[in-house]
Length: 601
Image (tube, rainbow, N blue to C red; front, side):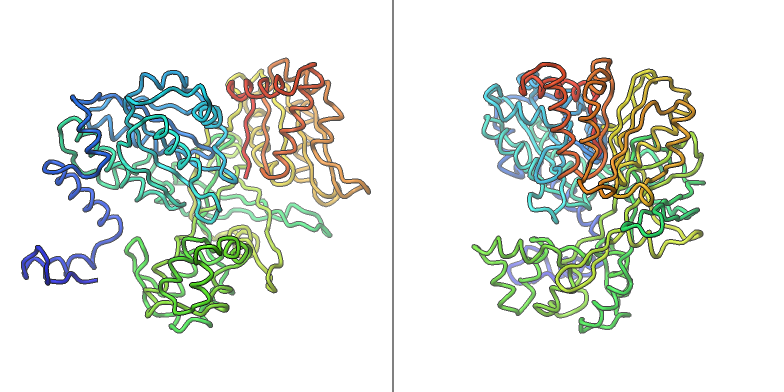
């Protein structure tokens, strides 16, 4: 889009210069430039009402900043640490803490508070944010008239309650009397650039309240990481092995993937995850190109400034398998289809939600036609493919320069078409030994082995939830850990679906694993799950808890993890002769002590 000279504050020469410059800038450069201009402007006029309120509050404000993060997979923690580093470099004294480690009553002493929080499941706070979230929304929460705050919310717009936890924190802090230091930012899965923009705004506001101006934060500094390779600069790892773990006749296909980390400098610990940037199914891309009015070889510029053919962009850059409310609303503005405009209109929220469920971009185009006057305008509303995170199934100590994954292939039928999981089928059908795939390590401090190798551990991981516990066992074997270990595993059939069976049997034999209980749901008329096996051993399980055992759960959150949680409460209540409220307090105390950890999805 070109600048119009009419009523413009720029001269003809300046306008021509800007019109030549703007089309050449990447998204990253535009954000940096906006931050620079905003920072320059704050020396003359207040940038926002939030800044004005802060600067009008009286005297020079405190240089102390508290950053609290709520993180399930580690993204919020990483951003909190980067924010702290940037603020310290600008002369602020910063305290960084997980919400679970912060004493809520200390809020009365905090003057400047930054909240960085992800949203988990159906709008829920992450496990390590739950207790702080509940305190803040309780009657015990103090008045915070003295507080300046800002919230960075992380989420995924393909979920209904996008960034809900961050929104809740933002509203509650305002209700308690706090003043926004800078407006809340809601970040989708591709969060690096908006997070950097938010941090620039926060720094400008903090400096404004100090009577100073803020120098712009280069994007690279705001997203710097310890290693050369990261989420924003993935390492291309070579595939060493790709095996099907299920036996002949199984209803499932579970891939065991081994990747080389040689030359990457990447390190991980048991409990961490691996991020993979997948490619879309080429068959789906071809079907999409057939219904579009543009040629596959037509060039488009993607959001990071690179030029690619339309086919390449739809294959390895843009998400084409998930519809979100935000994307459909943007598409409706470019579309001439009245039925689509009606679908996104006020009052049709449930109808839109029902339509999006199980449908993709190809469905949308077949139902309502294409949009945009060019291929460039067509792709302008699409999201970048988000990485998929998988719990690591290996110990780096036991497997130097390697990382192993356990991936369940996703295939299902919906709306008259066969559907495939983007990354799981990429791994199952198209990744061969010798191929390379872009990956990064996602550290997860919320799912870690006890520091004391003598501490007993209880692991509950049906299906692919077994992955991190394979890494736990490999690590403890290398350590020579003597603490007791108990594994609960479940799947459909003993004969075809006992993942890593030989390894578990060897660990039982050599004493690395003390006990193992299995539940194969389809091997008898009545279905049996891991929670049923837990109840069968409730007395012994509670004895382990009383001895200080750490409990780990990995797998499906909506059903399995919920059922296991309720079973734990039932065991604690019955075996400990406690009320349900006391059992909940018991489990909550375990969580505070990091003895109850979950890696659920």
